[in-house]
Amino acid sequence: MDARFNMFDNETAMKFFKRFANAGLVIQQSPLPKATQELVSLRASQINGCGWCIDMHTKDAEAAGETAVRLHLVAAWRESTVFTEAEQAALALAEEGTRLADAHQGVSDETWAQVRKHYDDDQVAALVSLVALINAANRLAVILHQKGGSYEPGMFAAAFD
Image (cartoon, rainbow, N blue to C red; front, side):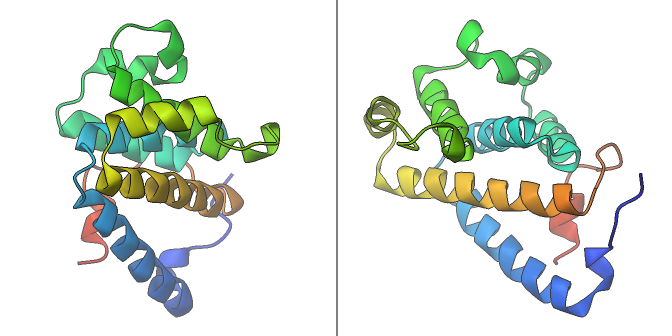
């Protein structure tokens, strides 16, 4: 199935995307580790079934030096040994923050305590913002049927230069 609508050919959509990209830039420039940013984005995108975002974050992470083993194990991070405790806390937050409807409490106190144990205030601000932003990006791409497979590393950032 082809994409339903080309947001990049629409003036209103491009105005929105430029601001959206600027919000992403704040997170990218934050002290939250880049590897954590990509792992969190990948995990939320897997949960949401966003092929475009899975493609983008897998390729961007790989281009930044992430290992294939870690990328392949993101979906099963609880059953693997390749993620740090801090990364596990971030992945748990990504899952719980993405699956809000699955639990009445949203993010659990246990997960929040682990996040606070491993991340300072600026990193927490970036992490929470990232979870919100990637979920919004997933929804845009899924609604429009934007398919994965054609993304090239850095391509999205270059569109807004």
